[in-house]
Length: 245
Image (cartoon, rainbow, N blue to C red; front, side, top):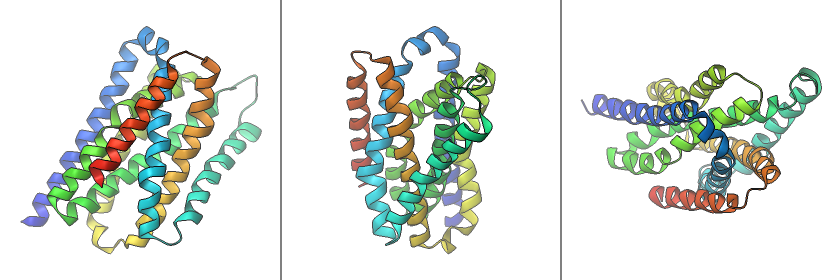
């Protein structure tokens, strides 16, 4: 009975995270002009969240769980860098898709992170319902802007609005309940050290996305108040860390 209630609690929370991310995608797709005018602020906000939450929460937590975490942190960073170079050098040509990697690389990083969010829901709710709720409060905070930013970057990369919405939904929204459903039956067999390695890899990917894709794009726009949205993102990351801590 306890296992059944835990399962449905995890499914409910991960579905809520999916719904909030989807809401962000739908809002930005519906209000096109508003979205384009404020895209730089969403990117700046997301950069603040992704980079700060990686450094102040995900990385320390992964090191606590696994001594090998720094190696996987570097691996996550380099994996996206190498994939980015592969796309730029062998798949894309300047005349055909100059900004494709601007959308695809963040999509991969955010998709990996969202999938791991689903696994983390399984882990924390299996500790206790209360622990799971505390973790969920922090994690859900970044879902709405995450969906917006994934959509905007894919669109800027040259995809149609319809494709951008679908890819953003698959990567940023659907991946969370998918991670939950795949991991829950095996959660008791997943060692803490392995989850720590996965978290570190995810953090490396997120730092890469924030530092080499989002922030440079923000700097090119050079809008006066983008620094305010960056600070706001960092503030949210602190709230996330404190709510989990």
